[in-house]
Length: 544
Figure 1: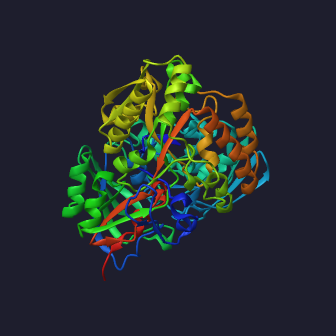
Figure 2: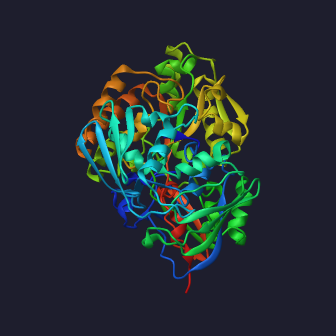
Figure 3: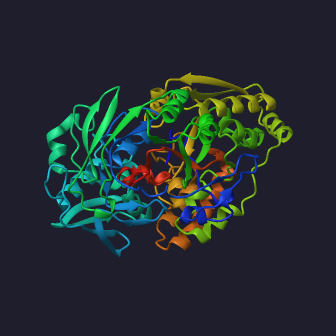
């Protein structure tokens, strides 16, 4: 998925020289930009005891807690602890059973999920097949307006075929659909609560009724969200170690860093890169890096303007000084990206990550780029790149792109918008009017690189610039019908090749995911699995 989750970064074997960091090992790493050494591990040290409560910092207030509309870090970070999916992505980026205890595929067009018995919703009612059917069908309903609707594009029917059995029938083979049952598309909520809450569902006025280790206690709009422990949670291995969690919203990067240092916030994911050095040296807690599937990219929003010419897109890519961008935007902690889908996105079949590793580095050739712009007749043409105060990294990258454009004869104009308006670009096509480029994070919800390339298909919701390539679409369908992960990875390499050749997305850089844990807490997973894994249940006291 490519959305404004800008500060998420990739656990890559380019960093580690192997995938051991993503699979659980910890090892020192130093990027080629001269940044300080760091380690990538999937979890922090385990909790030593219980806590009454802890406070967690979000960089923005969630715009919704409706699972069908949650399409950004703040809402998913909260919901990961409240609502659950049929499958689960683990901290080491594996897919395992969740609310579905098992599944079968009797033929390529049929998926049968057997639900875990005895699972209770927060109101004490028992989860059944009808709840799954209602939850998944709601994603498909145009009235819902779900950004996940395209994940259901090949779904013909969703039926309860037993009290604890759900059968999904497809119009054509779709491997990714099954994998995405570990992400927002596979979320299960109480059907009765959906009917009861109506339009208030997912808003500060409405209630949530899910199955996770925490339940929604209260949402004070503009101030905080508080979750309370669910003592009846089905997964005893993830029984909460804290009675409650309070989420606070701090948009300003400096203020957020100060909250970490002062202990006003016990912790938080997506630490501003401008604060990395200070937090590492301050002794106020632990700054940790974890696995991810993301890369910072430039997504083309308008193929009718100068960027509709492939030579201009390639020229802009060649003009980028990625190593200097990493130093300025990521504190030197990162590596230049080689492809739109990050190295960490290849975690499902680690041995196939060589299909990414063997890619050549993207060229940095200002003079060659200037010639391409001239050949395209684009010298002096204007390109509008949107920027925002949503994260300091956005402004840093935007300024670097503007400077690179100036070097090769392109007039890159920066259009600053509010954080809310920036987020709207990824869910509202009208918000893209007049824009040519946006800085995004290309990342997967699951550890399969095919998922990222899904969003470049013709007509997909995540295809923000409406790019269309028949060769790409055919190659995608071939890959998405291949059930064997290793063979599918080989077919995905073809999509990677086309995307690099045509550049509807310009890769920029990758860097590790980050989390800060104050002195009193530990236990949190460190990587992107926190978007769906009930990470808060693992957090407890750092000392006995």
